[in-house]
Length: 140
Image (tube, rainbow, N blue to C red; front, side):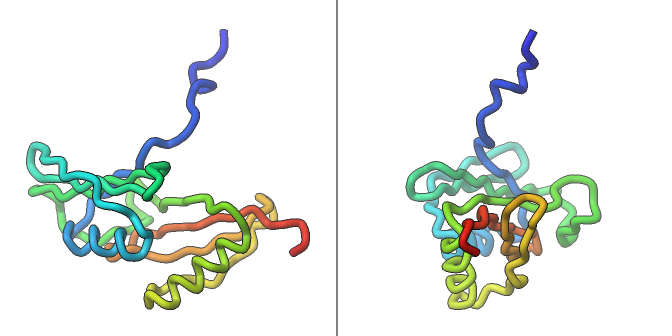
């Protein structure tokens, strides 16, 4: 019998709890170029659904009435970072230029030779790391 995991094809969306919903919605729409799709009220808070213009990548940003308000930490159980694949190595360089122009602090692009990739890491307003990855082109 085949394990049911073989039917998994992609992640549908990333859902993050943020400290200031309006600030985070503004940041994700401006920095990542996401569109605001809808607001989703839920018990004890609300969420805002965002997506890329082609609707291939979806994000849900949530505010909870009872959340702790503590800053994000990769040292807590739960999310460590979000990683997204870009189409090409050249796109990763364009993202670095975009982040510079948007005055978004980011790390230097790092090679990941074990994966045949390069990575660019930056941080959302709550300090959640966002990692952009590109496969290294043969001529680099």
